[in-house]
Structure formats: C-alpha cells, structure tokens
Amino acid sequence: MKDFAGKIAVITGGGTGMGRELARQLVAEGCNVAMCDVSAEAMAETKRLCEVEKLPQGLRVTTHIADVSIEDQLKRFRDELIEQQATDRIHLLFNNAGIGGGGSLFTNSREQWERTFNICWGGVYLGVRTFLPLLVKADEAHIVNTSSVNGFWASVGMGVAHTAYSAAKFAVKGFTEALINDLRLHAPHVKCSVVMPGHIGTSIVSNSRKLQNGTDSERLGPNDIVQARQRLKGMGIDTTPMSDEDIQKIALDRARSFRDEAPTTAARAATVILDGVKAERWRILVGDDAHKIDQRVREAPDNAYSHEFYQSFAAEVGWRLG
Ligand SMILES: NC(=O)c1ccc[n+]([C@@H]2O[C@H](COP(=O)([O-])OP(=O)(O)OC[C@H]3O[C@@H](n4cnc5c(N)ncnc54)[C@H](O)[C@@H]3O)[C@@H](O)[C@H]2O)c1
Image (cartoon, rainbow, N blue to C red; front, top):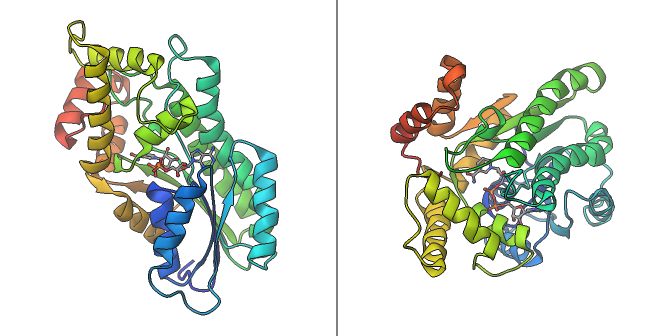
C-alpha cells in the first residue's frame, strides 16, 4: 500500500505510546482512524492531538472502548466502527495493544501471567479474526501485528523472569509469518507484517503495572515491591538495606527513564512502521538495538541466554532494562 489517504485504519491500544503516534501520523496523511483502548481518557487525548491540525473534510477519527483480550468487546468495536465510519471495509489493521508483567511462574499469579499472554497474543489473534472479513472486502489491505525483539529473543536481562510476554510475542511472530502464505493463497490483496521494536520510549512500564494491578496509582503494590527487589538483586544490587519506599522511588525512576531515555521515540517508531508498510516489508525491525540483537542472536544462538551475551549487548546499545 503506497498511500494511506482516504483509507480506513483500525488501531488497537491507540490511547498512548506507539498506537497514539500511529494514529497521529495516519491522520496527518489523510487516513481515517478507528482506535480502541481500555482507557477512554487516553483515547480522548489521542483524538485531540489528531485534530490539532484541522482535519480534511469528512475525515473521521473514532474512539471505542474495547479490551482486545475479550472477543465480544472486539466485536462490539467492529460493529461501532461499521456504523460510525459508515463502512463495511477497512484497509489497515494495527494490532498494537500490549502490556508486560506477570512473567514468572514462581512469583506471579496465574491470573497475571494469563492477562499478559491473553492481551499480547490473544488480542492479536482475535483482532485478525474479528476484522479479517472487513479487510478482505477492501481492494487492498494490510495487517500489522506488533511483536517485539522478545518475539525472537526471550529476555530483557538476567534479573527478570519474562515468560508470559516472550511466549506471546513469539506467538505473534510465528502466526504472522505463517499468515503471509495463508493470505497469499486465499486473499492475495491482503498483506501482513510483523513489527519487532527494540526499546521505544513509551509509558508501557507504568501502564502495564496499572493494568496488572487494576489501579490508576503509580505506586507499587506489595507483589511489585518483591519483584522490584528481585530485579535489582539480579542486577547485582543488594536491596537489604533499602526500605520499601526506596524501592518505590527506584521503580518510578525506572519507568520514567524507560520512557524518557529510550534510544527511539514512539513517534520515530510509528514512522518506521508506516514506512515498512508502504514498502510492503513483512518484517519490520524498529530501532538500532532491534537490528543489533537480531544479528547477535543469529550469530550466536547457543549463547543468547548467557550473562556475557546480555552484558555485551546491553553495553553496546546502552540498555539498562533488567
Ligand atoms: N515500548 C517498547 O519498548 C516496546 C518494545 C517492543 C514491543 N512493544 C509493543 O508495542 C506495543 C505498544 O506498546 P507501547 O510501548 O506503545 O505501550 P503503551 O503502554 O504506551 O501503549 C499501549 C496501549 O495499549 C492499551 N492497552 C493495554 N491493554 C489493552 C487491552 N487489553 N485492550 C485494549 N488496549 C489495551 C494501553 O491502555 C495503552 O494505551 C505493545 O504491543 C508492546 O508490547 C513495545
């Protein structure tokens, strides 16, 4: 798809981060956008930002509350979209919504684990199922599924258990790669891409914590404090002399620096993704760190989960995540 003007795009998780920037850039190119999120407030801000510049006549930006892990909510989103965008077809589907957390089989509850898995994997799978008939009706269409570098490398550092997110992101990558041929066989006018970002500056750390804990508070719950202590221990830091309040401060600072000190901004990531769609690349790596880890894992797969591998990679790209 060379041009987004006049097309209709669905974006899941459009409330903040890369979803918000995709919405802004698509609207700037004259594309209609229907977004969903679990936060009405965040979507209202995205819509406001999209409309800062006067929209071309007739361009629609619609917001819809839907949790992507719940099929009935996605179906309601689809039905609202059909009505509010006055269409029976869409051209672009960005399955972008995702959260982290719940990564340990030992220290997280099954509920936390499955929340991450069901949003990051289930949301992509159900998104494709729900919107495929509308994509097929368009004369050209493109599905963009967001995985991660954790879709080919299941780690963010030695101090962090990361099983739910990695399992989900590997699933997104495998599903999308296999979808290439399913589409080629049955709906060749529909293309697909898997997006694998490195570290992108968004609020995913604090958003995930809030969604996992069912709260709007930035403060860590008791389970988060235990996890944060383990993470610091894994980084070789002795937390025994630290109070829970000290741990709170370190975790808040980590969420801030994850957003503000990332090598790639959310806006830049959205541009790379949209350029990848225009170039019909099925595989879209985002950020130098993503390209470097891809290369390193391919060069030395047997070492990919050793301390030395992580430390040498983190030192090269400046990661301070785990
Ligand atoms: N930020 C990174 O470094 C990074 C790296 C690799 C991959 N990713 C992936 O990129 C995607 C976007 O992440 P981001 O960094 O922009 O995060 P973000 O937290 O800024 O944005 C995610 C949005 O999704 C929404 N959301 C969460 N759960 C939802 C659900 N169940 N239903 C609907 N909406 C939901 C959130 O409310 C939020 O608005 C995610 O899939 C994430 O896993 C992010």
